[in-house]
Image (cartoon, rainbow, N blue to C red; front, side):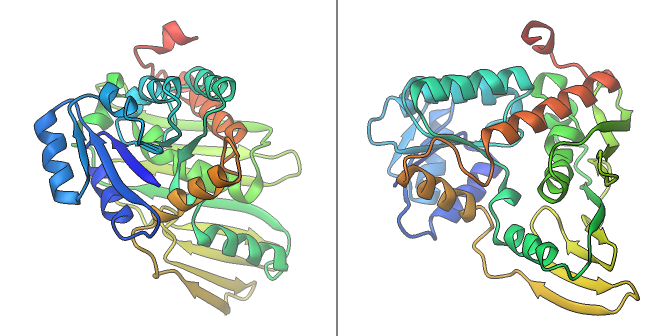
Length: 326
């Protein structure tokens, strides 16, 4: 499959390094608004084509899948550009800046019969199936609660602190604990409560979110760009609990009984970067004629975006296009 990357920043570099080690994936084209930057990226990573505009990339008939690696604030425009030119899309998280944009993009993709999925890598990793298998085995009993956190000391990064770049901890980091909870407990929560610390640029630097479910289950979630956290997820049940070391890229699962005795553990180290699984999922879905990946259905993408919209509204975190989009 001839793979193209739209954007040539850090996350694009990670993806380029990943696909270079995959079989059946060709490092075909990269586009940047700066042709020199695109050319340098292409040369470094063995891409055949380099384009100085995104429009040129999507007009290339050879491109079979486009990975969108630009800031959240630009995902809507870039996904729309790809879909209008019939190009299948793997779009980085957060999928868009708000739910209205997400719904428009997914509606357009359905209308045009073009494949698109959200590149939230944790949804595609083998560890997700292994975590679910432990739950289904009943070894920790009935799951009652989930806690998860993700934090990095990256407050100096420009895109995180600017509302015009859809900044804040929520869309960049909080999306992972939210997805973690939804993967375990589902996304049909009945109540949401939260609090956040707001920066002088009017984005959230850290937040805590509680999801309550009608059946009595609960998820407690935290994210921050002010400090490194342990990135741990804990799934608690009536007969024990499970620790997930690093919810952002699971390194190890440890299962304990109610007496804190270690029952089993499983490690995850055999991967390129972890990005390969979402690419493989795209290839498989497209081969089967699907317009979305079963690992991250469009309905789930919209549900998460709606939750993040409601949280930002509660906190007073407003992006420039929110007023026109709502």
